[in-house]
Each structure stands twice: as structure tokens, then as C-alpha cells.
Image 1 (tube, rainbow, N blue to C red):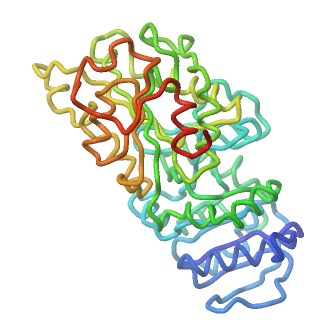
Image 2 (tube, one colour; image 1 turned 90 degrees about the horizontal axis):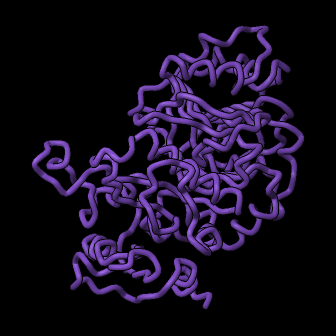
Length: 401
């Protein structure tokens, strides 16, 4: 695989005794890249196992800079237009890009803060359909899904790159390409941070978290029910404005975010099958939940929902493999994030959630401040422990009591 980095003086910034550019080059080499084109200041050095080409920046912006390599690259390549630190399984990213058959793929995940980030909106096929640019402010109806600044490009992208064309990679190339279904989004939980978060980067490297989050490694997850666990238990949340966070939920999520665990919501929402709400309104309520968490400095890694009902007389419901205590939603998360179930937890406010965790061979915790009848279904399912709020459960799991 080939990579292109648009370098700047910022790449000379020292991170734990080594320049950011050297961290980048070693990360590329260690994840399957064998040839790198640097567009900008010349790199004075070498990295064993890498062929490095230094090219003059044509000073045509983050998009126009690609003209420097337009005649040199004939296969898919990684493009890094801005200074970031990353520890990423690039082979996985490349497989996604190939399977998506896109001209451009974005590596993406949740960020804090959401404001000031390049937030993305995708369809059910992980195609980019909209977004909020960093200099825009409309983040109140967006999922917490942001570009991490690593892009895989097909050489077909060079059709848009003229020799003397000055343009911005995101605003003038990526965003217009979304209208033709040419841009795909690859979700990741891996550690990628802009240079401005230097202290966070150094802490993650020193603690080993950056390397552990590489998806070549098995991941730990905390699977969370939604109603009565993350948001307040009460009337069915049939409209986005009814979404209210549970007491202490944001603090609990912040603790998970700082740990090795990935917080992933898995929720049964039969209110769709019952006609009480629509898929569109359900997803709007989930965007609302992510915005509320984001305002308090927390995020969920991902969310999966089952819109079906137990009534199997309807074909739509009968074919369901996702309604808890089935583990279809957990299996989707496992495939995306390389999760080890035996090192993971399932937390919810009913023994149906407990049984889900048991079916997946996860450890389990039962919350007693949500559903007033927590043992109505699957009363024989025994959790590892019971407690009140999510925050107390997370403190116990992380040894922070």
C-alpha cells in the first residue's frame, strides 16, 4: 500500500521525544505501507522498510496538493492532509474500502467536543450523505460521528485534480462527491487525534491505550441497554424531545471513554413495529442522545437497535435475529470492532438484558432503578452483580468504587 502525507512545519512537533512525522512514518510501515510520498518540507532521514519520496508542495491547498502525485500513483492509496497521530489497522481500512467500491473512504468515529469537528451523516449502507464542516455550528441534530482525517482514495479521484487547481480537499472534493454515492464511511474505535491534543496523545501512548485500541487486537466492550440505563425510564421515547439522560449516565460514559472498554448501546425498540413512532423519529432521538452526552464530554462508540416486535405472525418480525435476548446486535458490533465477548459486559435494567449477555458469554450487571419489573422476563437469568444506577455499575467494573 502507498500513502501520501501533506506535511507542514507542525509535523516537526515533538511527541514523547520523537517528531510527529516520524511517528506517522513508523505507524504506516508497521501497518502494511511500504511507499510514502511526502508533499511539503523535505524529510531529512530514513525509516527502515519504507521507501520515502519527498515532493515539493504545489501550494494549491489540501486538495490541489494531490496534483503532485497524480501521475505517480496507479492504485488505492492513503491520504493524510493534516497533522494527526494515529495507531490504526490500515489493512482493515483497505479491506473496507475495497468492499465498498468507493472512490473515497473516510475513517471515522466519535469525538469530544463535537463542535468544531467535521461531523458526518451516513445512510444504511455507510455512504456519506451529508455533514457539518468544522467552521459550521449546526450540531444539534447530528450523530457523534466525525472524520478522523485519514482517507483512502481510488486513483479515479485524480479525474478531479487539475495541474493548477487550488481547492480544499474536504469542501471542494469530498463533500461534492457524496451526491454521487462515491464516499463511504469506515467506523473505527482506534486512537486517532489531531496534534492540538498533544497531552492526550502522549498519555495514550505512555499508557499503552493507543496500541491496545488498534483493531488488530481484540477489544473489550460494555454493551448498554438504552431505556432505564442511558436515558431515563418512563414513557416511550417516541419523539426526539422526549430523550432525557439518566442520572449519572454522562459521567459513567466518561469513565468508560477513558478506559479500555468501548461503550456500545444495544436496544429493543418495538415501538416502531407497533406504529408508535417511525424509524426516522427513532434515529432522531438517538442523535439527540449523542448530542446531550457530547455536551457533557461523553460519547457512545456505536448504537444498534431492533425495531421488531415479538409478534411473529408478521414476516418482518418473524425474520428478526436482533431482538434481545438474541445477540444479533452484539454480533454486528463484534464484527465491526473485533470484540472479545468473554472480556466484555452487558448492562441493563431487566433480566432480558442479563440473558442477552449470558447468551453472548459476557459478564452482566442488572440495574434496579429503571424498569419497575426487572425480572418479568427470563427471571432465572442471574447477573454477576446488581446495583442502582449505571454510574455505580461502571465504577465497580473499573475498580473505581
